[in-house]
Amino acid sequence: MARVFPDGWREMRASGAAERELQTLALLADGLDERYDVFHGVHWTRVGQDRFAIYGEIDFAIVGPTGRVLLIEQKSGFLGETADGLVKRYPQAEKNVAVQMARNADALHTRLRHYCSNERSGETTVVDSLLYCPDYTVREPGSAGIDPARIVDARKRDDFLRIIRQILPAEGEVLALRPKILRFLGDILELVPEVNAVVGEACALYTRLSGGLAHWARRIDFAPFRLRVIASAGAGKTQLAMAVFRDAVAAGRRPLYVCYNRPLADHIGEIAPAGGEVATYHQLADRVSRALGQPVDFSRPGAFARLEAILDSFTPAADAAATGDKAGKNWLFDELIVDEGQDFEAGWARNLLRLLRPGGRAWWLEDPMQNLYGRPPLALDDWVCLRAQTNYRSPRAVVELLNRLLPLDPPAEAGSPLAGGEVDISTYADGNSADLIAKSVAAITRAIGAGFRRPHIALITYRGREHSQLSPYDRLGPYPLRAPTGRYDLFGGQETTDGDVLIDSVHRFKGRAAPCVVFTEIDFATLDEKAIRRIFVGATRATMRLALVLSESSARKLLAPLEQDH
Image (cartoon, rainbow, N blue to C red; front, top):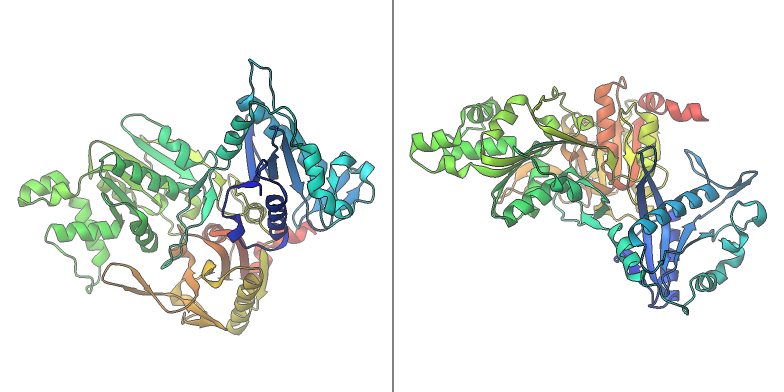
């Protein structure tokens, strides 16, 4: 049996083209022996002469026993044969297969030559390419734009493994570079855990962040350390926050992680190592007030304003000296990590910085596109700023659709290892609750039919709980819903109703994600900045599949660019 990287693929569930690729992966794993190494979902990036980063995907890369590399491009379903060669037609575009294969092979070969060459021996990497289209018979192989000997179509499907062995023979001189090639391919498939478990479920899913924030932002060093990271949804801000938190604890430093949303703070609190503090801004104020013996009565109006006032006047060292207790010392930290910084007010930043010890480090992570509360942008003029626009979480089909529908400036960049299927879009009659429910139920049913389990589906509403037509959040058609009750247990955990499909609002779900998101009840009068941000946030919660359920009037406003294309 061949060695397959990364592992865990047999537990994956998919549909459509992704399912066909998993079937091919099983064929390769079982049909080749242990001398072959199979990498799937290999992504490359390089900087060309124009200094722009280029991203692409190679479905399979096989390293043979001698060290030769074969890149396999799989095209499932129907292909088109044009004067320019074979093309694959997608809902949003048409791609020339030969051009795509040549570009991918050239880019990966360039990086392999750079990292894996052996100047002493003169050895160099040998890279070949193969097109595998198991569902389509190429009528005119000579005009496909690809060497006919390197096309395995439906007629030659049974010879697939034999052809691979011919290209990658088991016998012959073994390149000394082979171990280096394997290390290189393994490195660009590096996986880091993403913080995206839904409330009440620790679901460890993974997202590839090649060159992402969690890897290279922590290698920046300057003093005083004040780093502002402005990064797109899915760029890895929360992963970076957790890596910084763990680094601090491991080094014997005391970290403070602060965000805006309670559900995100609850989840981070569950997975963060002991030795630091995790809280929302208002939770932090509440803990400080209790440490100072000034607890706030939440039964009285204006409780949150009083909490904010406590931090406005709180200076740790001075309060410790004045009260004669250790309250101030308990609230001094070596590392400050602010997540969801776009939701913070200017005064909050000043208050938090007062909690840093001399020489302490501060990280400010934000995404202006996720500013759902209309906060004015913070100045932070004396901070070093780092920007990252690549979304590694959402499938490329979702990112491409958002770029077409929304005036994003700058456009979102797709870096997910998943191409993703076509976004499931449906509409309901304006103001018709029964039709909204029916269309939402149908979207969930289609997701289940595509292979998603109910706990991996999140039903996210565009409206808040108070104004939702789906309330009460207990059942939607045949599906019992798992909804936040607003109550917390003795350990501070969010209590939810008994159900297996999560339902929540886009505001509360910001900062988290799910394999399948049904973003429903999308209804707005004007496609203004507020609506654009809310749509962007809701759509980018999906890691594999996205369904949009819109009112008919909103669909006419939002989907106009798609209609113009047709």
